[in-house]
Amino acid sequence: MNILITGGAGYIGSHVLKALLERGNDSVTVIDNFYSGSKEALITLESVGKFEFIKCDLSDTFSLREIFKTHKFDAIIHFAAFIEVFESTVKPLKYYLNNTANAANLINLAIEYGVGKFIFSSTAATYGEPESGVVSEQSPQNPINPYGKSKLMTEWILKDAAAANPNFKYGILRYFNVAGASSDGLIGQNYPNATHLIKVATQTITGKRESMSVFGTDYATKDGTCVRDYIHIEDLASAHLSVLEYLSSNDSDIFNVGYGRGFSVFEVIETAKKVSGVDFKVINASRRDGDPAVLISNADKLKTKTNWKPKKDSLELIISSALEWEKKLK
Ligand code: UFG
Image (cartoon, rainbow, N blue to C red; front, side, top):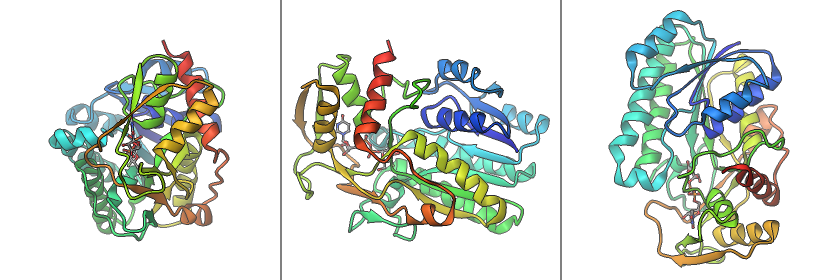
């Protein structure tokens, strides 16, 4: 297949790129603007396989159209987006313009240029604050922050676009909390300003931060801290290949991508201390805006309808791979 990856230098995009290069069946074009993506990751991946890179910002509609004029894609895997829940509450337009408006333009080009498959990085944040905390693909979507809303709107755009264009199929992947790094140590989370829990914990273990905060200890959960479904980046990456294959003989569909179990912030911190042997400083802080108490996937659909087989369902493994990677970063 000829595949276009947007945001292929980013954390998730680069792991999916790596998985495609290792599979070796495809001709892959990557675009990225290096907002949070890593040039080093792309340089490293050149040793894994051949791909074309084009520097492009999705808001540059002229350059984007030129790419479609000069390439023929069978599939697009669309990662390029802003991803920080808290930032989206203070800069909502930043999220709507990139995650929704730029995505709409990309979908429009995909249809105009006859691209048959579109894999979209959506998020568990589209579910909002579910009553039971465990969500299936049919659960109501009531996002409580602009990030989740910006992604949900793109899901709607994809559904309407596919309904009106029979040759266009989408695979919507709703990610839960992705973390960790590639097990061969080649790539990982590079973005130094990342706010995600496991990244912050590994930065604290390696002395890049003096301490870390727990945002809220008064939630109605087992220990008062938020509960999330942490998934290893390599299992998340392989889900994209499974859904791409699924779309070859099936209609558009939506999949949760998680393991179907949750850990609290305190449990993650305890595991990080155990795995690293470092008793780092933790400060109990107030709640962070936009955080639901519990968000766990029911991921049965992905396991039963596609050939996806998770291989790294272990919090220790996720944290130790993230830590090994963090130690390598300057
Ligand atoms: N947290 C802390 N301290 C930190 C960082 C995070 O206590 O320094 C807490 C947060 O308050 C939250 C939990 O750890 O309760 C997880 O926070 P993350 O920032 O790691 O991740 P989020 O759950 O906010 O969001 C992530 C992705 C979203 C996705 C969501 C799905 O960024 O794209 O997981 O659950 F939608």
